[in-house]
Length: 219
Image (cartoon, rainbow, N blue to C red; front, side, top):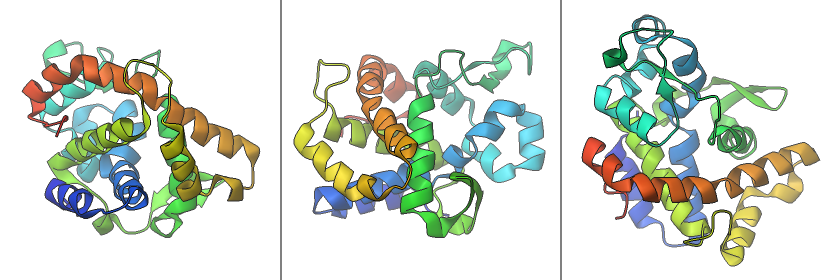
């Protein structure tokens, strides 16, 4: 599997905005953590470890689970384990990341289709896990990729504002006009625009995230 250092090197080597988009979306989509979100939400940690060890490895460290809670992507799920010290993860009722995850799923089926088997426009299974980011660095790759995309597309201080010049380039890279169903186009646009609010939330919580996980999010 690919590592955090692979992602950082490829992002540093990207010489155009379009190349950066490719690296960033690979970090977000070709990522064992991202494709395992449903299993992480459904199963407790012991079950996840037995059934899906590759996915379990991405959230094995308690410090990583705590960061995912700090940024609002998960809550502590006391139904899986009443002991809060276990820090079992469950998606929150008010899911700020839901539209973004839907968008990443759709982008994956259209832009990275050689890596997935799909069904009804959704990712069904992975073709070659070796090409994905995995292990304990997978969440770090996800967060660094998310931060890089936020910084490219969102104006500081306005929750939903986009840099329109960069957004036009993003639309071109995504080839939105080639997507057959209008609902898919809307799903992607809604998810990408949701980055504005996520960006503000990450900025507000950046110090805590850096302290917990050692992520140089501002680099």
